[in-house]
Image 1: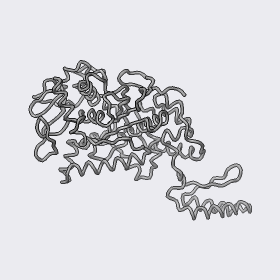
Image 2: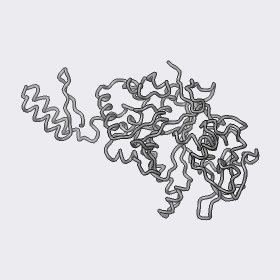
Image 3: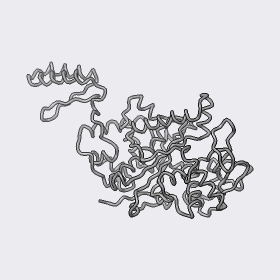
Image 4: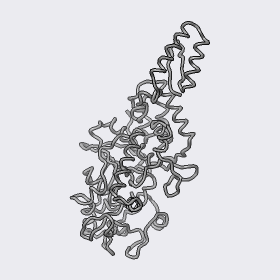
Length: 426
C-alpha cells in the first residue's frame, strides 16, 4: 500500500507520515466554543478530521490511534449568553456541547477517543495553572495588572508556523491593545474574574485562563505527550491560536515542538464571503437536517472538495451530493477498501470517484435504509406485489396505474433488465 502523505502547514510541503516506533498515533483537533450551535463551516473541520481519524484507524488499528477534540466551555461569549438567559454559564456550555455531539454524529462523525473540557484541565499536574507557572518561572511570561501574559519577544521561533512578519500578523489579527502589555503581540495566559464571573484560585489571584493556553494544557494532559503527531483545525486558527499554542508549549517543554505535523482545512464560503457568525451568513447542520437533508448528503458535500481548498456552500452542492449517493446506493458493492487517493493528503475528490470501494473509510454508504427511511413499507410492498402480478399477466394498463399511484405517494418503482422490480423513496 502507498504510504500516507500529509500536507504540513509548518513546512509547506507533503510529508510521509509514519507512527513513532512503539507509540500510538496522537491527533488533536481544536473543537468548538460551546455558546451556540455549530455552523456548517465548523462542521467541515469535524468531518475532515473524522475522515483522518478513520483512515489512521484503518491503517494502524483502532487501539493505536488516540484522537482528542476539545470543548472550550469557559469563554466570554458563553458568559454573555448566560447573563442574557439568566442561567449559569455551565448550563449554556452543557446545552451546546450536547447539540454539537448530536449534530456531528448525524454527519457520520465518530466519537473521538477523548473530548476534554477546558474547565476540567485548569488545575492538576499538567493543567493550565501549572503550565503558566512554568512559563513565568522560565522568564517567558510576566504578571501585569492581574493578568499573566506570554512575552512573544522571548521566543525566537514566533511566526514560523504562519510565516508572516510580526507587524503584518499583529495588524491582521484581533490582537488586544492594553497598557500593561510589554509588546503588542503578547497574549493573555490568565486574566482576573469579577465576583460574578466564573473563576479559579491561582498564584495570581482568582481568575480564568486565556484561550490559547487551554489547548496546550489539554494536549499534554489528555494525550500525555509534549510532542504529538498531528495537530489540526481550521485555516483561521493558524494565527494567532496555533502560533501561540506552539510558542507556549515549546517554551514550557524545553524546546520540544508541539506537533510533528500541522494540518488546516480551508474556509467554507457563502458566495464570495467566508461563512462566519460575526457576518451573520451562517447555515447550521441542524437547519439542514431539520429541512430533510440526510446527514450523509451533508457529509459528502463537505468532502466534495479537497480539504485544503475553499468550498462554496450552495443548495446545488447538496443536491449533487444527494444525487451521487442515490447512484452509489443503487450500485451497492463493498465499502471496506482504502482508495490510494486518500493516502495522498486526503484527496477526497479522487477518492469519491473510486466509491463505493472506500465508502466505510469516508464514513459514507453505511445507511441500510437509504431509499426507504420514513416510509410505511407494508403498503409499498403490497403495491409492489400487485404491480408484479399485473406485469406477469401483461396487464400493462393496470401496472401503469399502480406505478403512477405509488409515484404520487413518493415511491419510485424501478425495473431491471432481468425483469426484477425494486422501489425507492423519491
